[in-house]
Image (cartoon, rainbow, N blue to C red; front, side):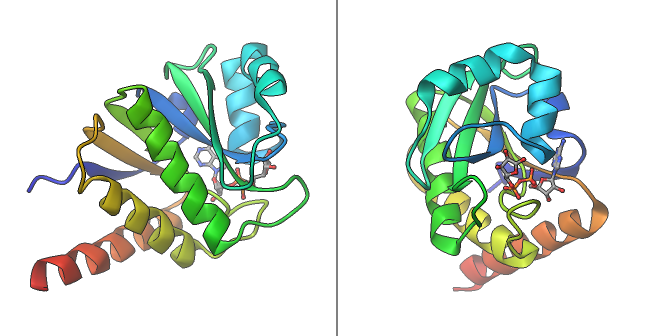
Length: 175
Ligand code: APR
């Protein structure tokens, strides 16, 4: 089966996809990191919509306009409370709900960052395992999604995601 999951190194705000996923907090206040890049490149409309949509539950995901980004939408995945930390469960839920929001809108392409691994301090390998497990599960059922990109910010993180993906899919094949 041709994989619908792809990995690349780069700036997620440059992705020409239906939706980019923001590494958000439950207040939907766009801070630094991915959120800061989305805010500065996407323009004020995104935070304005976030101000109306937030706060959301921990692990929730909210959809806003993509503003001036190439992406039509931003899906804000709240894996932490402002000033808090990402946990395995909040990351799993935020990933799962982001995929559901994309499916609800019938989106074909989506780009994820390594949620939780910056300001929120979540370990990279654990992040990869959780996000990829959720994504592989989502693709087992009917979905509008055809291509899911993981856009990593440096070589080490890219390598970790690719390694974890091979471990997860190799086990599936051999089972
Ligand atoms: N494109 C892709 N990846 C990026 C980009 C970018 N433009 N900028 C940063 N990253 C990477 C970071 O290197 C890190 O690996 O995304 C990962 C997530 O980092 P953060 O954006 O800091 O997200 P997170 O750790 O989930 O913290 C979220 O930080 O900025 C605030 O408002 C945000 O409260 C929220 C918290």
